[in-house]
Amino acid sequence: MTYFVYILTSLKDSKRYIGMTSDLNKRLKEHNSGKVKSTKNRRPLELIYTEEFISKKEASNRETFFKSHKQKN
Image (cartoon, rainbow, N blue to C red; front, side, top):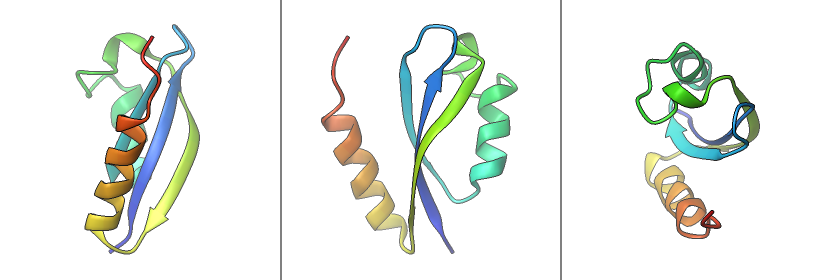
């Protein structure tokens, strides 16, 4: 199975969201249809970055890295 770490940007408020998934297309649809609590009020969202991993652990570590180095607004 392949895992993705992704970054979205809100076209509404320019804030970013970092996430991880094994089905990127499905997850993007969930974000933009309002099914994800943390992003539903920030739609529309645009995918600005992805990285692909062969293990969930690697993807999780990379997601944690991005979230821990994110600039605080």
